[in-house]
Image 1 (cartoon, rainbow, N blue to C red):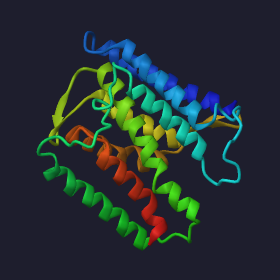
Image 2 (cartoon, rainbow, N blue to C red):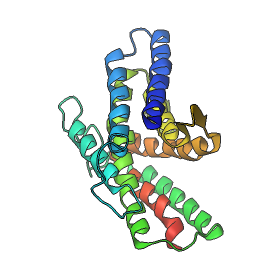
Image 3 (cartoon, rainbow, N blue to C red):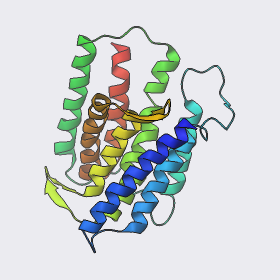
Length: 238
């Protein structure tokens, strides 16, 4: 029950903030796409949590949520297959925008270098093979197609205005997608009250801006997926 209340809280925040922005931007926002984005957030959480624990765990004796991640990814790919989304428009393509490598690769390399330095300075204890396998695959494979793929596309269509910054066209939807990614890690409900961890929000929401920038620059999820999984796994490998 706590999980359902928690995700309803996130959805409510999205609708209140998004609705408020829509009222301030008449004619430049779409309630239909905002509601679609809210529905995507709710369904994604249902998949990740196996319907908040109601569905049996089909992968027992595992330390990680393989089943939830696979279910969430399957639904994301199904949504991306719908005509109003499309795999290419959702970033599910290996084709990079012409000329994007010149700026995207240095940014990706800098991100990787930062996490490598952090891993060397703050080494972790040895991890199991399952932990390494999970961190090398599922976080990027599931979260990027959702947050930087179908959800970003829905939110960009919910808010039509654009601002050119750092070589890409930002929308309010792009910022909201990063906020929702941070809330997924920092916001919850337990013991009868909502909780929020600002540090976790900063450590997840702010780096996700880099992922969004890469998607907007390259029009592909390839580099964000690689960057995400590298950042998660490098601490376990050095």
